[in-house]
Image (cartoon, rainbow, N blue to C red; front, top):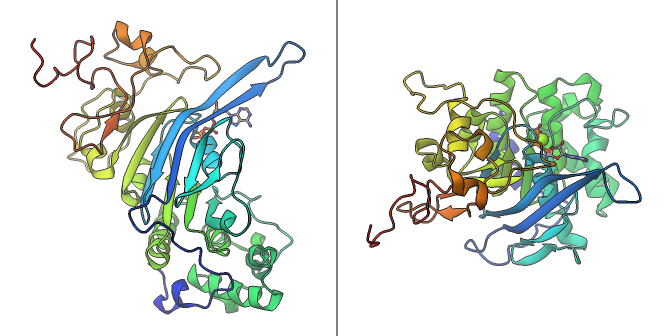
Length: 364
Ligand SMILES: Nc1ncnc2c1ncn2[C@@H]1O[C@H](COP(=O)(O)OP(=O)(O)OP(=O)(O)O)[C@@H](O)[C@H]1O
Ligand SMILES: [Mg+2]
C-alpha cells in the first residue's frame, strides 16, 4: 500500500504532458513482432568466432493496463528481450508498434515526445543511481532534459518522492548511499515515472531485496499502476512474485517464447513440458499443492549452438523424433479459447508425436 493515499501521483500537477491515448482501450499498447537479437563474440577477418542467439522470433502484445510477466531460467534472453522492447538495444530484425504507431523497426524509430512512453527499471544495484546527485536532483534530471524549468522539475521531484513513500522533508536532499536497498529501488521507480511513461519494463525489480521489503515494493508498484493506468512488463526469476503481479505470463526458453497464457490458466494447467518442469522446481507457497512433473535437471544448452527443432528437446521427458526435425509453432491450445498458446508437438493436434491430440473430426 502507498503509505499516504493523499500523495496520489495522478492528482499532482505534472510538468510534462500526458502521452495521449490514440487507439482506445482495445488497441494494444505495445505490439512487438519477430524480434531477433544475436551477439557476435570475438572473431576477425573471417567473421565472428561465435554467435549467441539471445532472442529469436520474439513476439509480444501488451494490452492497456495489463501486466505481462516474463519467466525463464538464467540466460534465456529475458533481459535482452526487455532492452529490445524498450528500444535501448536495437534488434537485428522485427518491429515494435506502440499504441498504433511505429516505435521501432531496423530502419526507423520513434522520435521526440513519444520516445518517453516506455521506461525501464532494473534490479537495484549500487550503480543504479548517480552517487553525486541528491534524490531531488536525480528525479528532476529527466524532466529537465525534456525542457521542464529547474524549479518546476525540483518541485515535481518532491511529489514523486512522496508518491513512492519517501517523505520529501526527510529524503529530498539525501544521497543514494544514505538509502537502504528498498528505498533506492523506490527512487529508481520514481525516476522511471518522472517523465510520465505509459509502459514500465521492470527487469528483476525486487530480486535484490529482502522478502519483507520486496512485498512493500510490489505493493507500491501495484498501487502506482492503478493510480496512473500504467502497463507493466515484469521480469522475475521468482514465480510466486510473477503470479502475484501478472495478468498474463510468458515463458521463455533459450531465446524463444514456449508458452503464454493468463496467469490463472498457466499456473493451473501449464501445457509445455518446460513450463511444467520450471513450475515443479518452484518452492510452493501452498503446501497442499502437489508437484506433478519432474523438476528441471541440468543446464540449458549453449545459445551459440541451440538444438534443432524444439530447443527444449535435449532436456524434455517426452521427446520424440519430430521434435528434432521441426520447430513447433507457438499455437493456440485446443479448447483454451485462443488465449493459451504453447509451442510443443505433444500439445498440438494433428502431428506425428504420439501424445499429439487427435484432430477433431479426423478419422483415426
Ligand atoms: N552484451 C552481450 N554480449 C554477448 N552475449 C550477451 C550479451 N548480453 C547477453 N548475452 C547473452 O545472451 C543470452 C541471454 O542473456 P540475457 O541477459 O538476456 O538473459 P536473462 O534471461 O536476462 O538471464 P538472467 O536471468 O541471468 O538475468 C545469454 O546467453 C547471455 O550470455
Ligand atoms: Mg536478466
